[in-house]
Image 1 (cartoon, helix red, strand yellow):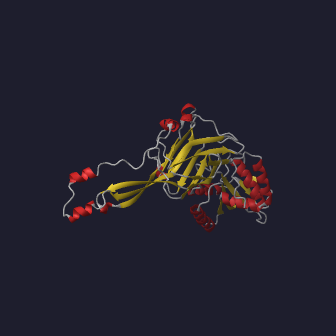
Image 2 (cartoon, one colour):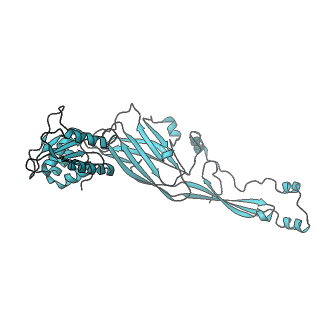
Length: 395
């Protein structure tokens, strides 16, 4: 099945396709378009007498739909088409409504009901062919199929490639987390036991003196002058638990894509998604101009990208790179699926990308002292690995 066939770009070409297709189906070389553009057509764009039907005319009403803003056929439209087609002279035996609209179970149910009502009243039957139905008919009729595929090859071709920057459709992020094991040990082993044997409590003043603040068993390491300068220009301190990435869009077609919008839906286990630039010193002196609006929509777990109003269309073979995106990830392995959709005035497309999260753990240990043996324990804490908590002694 040639399910990838796209609908014609305008209503004139759609009428021509329907004329070619049903002319072959009906074996009716006399199938005609009903009058010139602008004249009343009585609800019928094409008409003819299928082979074997004697003198019974069949009619076709072609409804080209905008695939982005209005891709549905309404019950009201059906009623209006049927009402107009009743004026056709001579009376029709059947009326086909051919449309590029998306298939709808509700509308098909309404179609069946209207068809029965029409037949019970001695009027023409009504049948709707959605674009999916038409594609199936094109595939079943060899002459129309060959003709339409050939026509499409010489027409404008729309095709995009939406990927991660670098051309990948799957990436692996390695967020880094700090795993701190703290061992609480008795500072003065036996002291608490001796006090208990003597039936005395250790005075609070003595406790305070015995438990004077300790110097930590680890020392903060210096990030180095270049790293410190780079972080000075960053919009936030370095957080290595964030997964940074960006997208690119390439026009692989033969015509420019104008007034487009990209919607990227995130599905998976992550804590936060934000848009920004992973700034460095180079960005301070070589900041590229921003010619699009890239914003996150946390409520719907999606990202929306649109060029600014004054931007030129995306030309054939042109590639545009978008702002950086970061995901605040969790400390366990996960998969995040991205479903993207491109919408424009005359073209739409969609696809999927994948992000694999493979966390890295930086381990460190600390020792803390307690007086009461009941407080002896071991705790494990996992937190983001940042420029503020990088320390010596990691292993």
